Image (cartoon, rainbow, N blue to C red; front, side, top):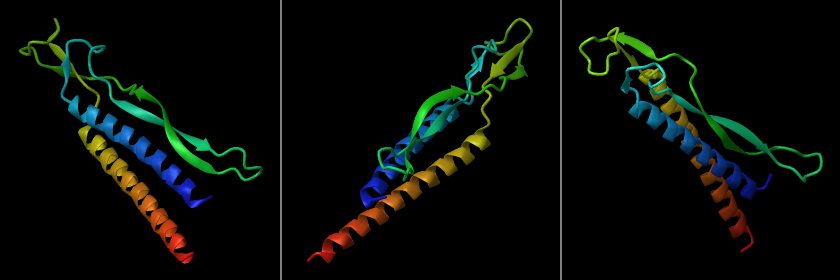
Length: 138
């Protein structure tokens, strides 16, 4: 794998983690959304990643990056809460909150942030190696 391929792999990882961070931010922003029906409650969203493989290199196939295939909604049911005085309460006095656990989302955010930082470090290392290789020819 050439140093330029490392840059491409890292760039795809940065893009994927950026999408992951955006979906986590959206989940956190909507974690307190309330609805009068279970169907109207906000459902957490998560990106699904796919590994991209190199082709055209004979028998030497290796990882060539990652991409976001789709963003799926959580299948967990919304939280039901008894709040008869709430303006959105249904006939039985219940409201429905999103199924988002802010603690889990913060842990996911830290993980995504660290993955993003690792990809940047890989790019910086590849850049330094490229620069050193160029100076060898002088």
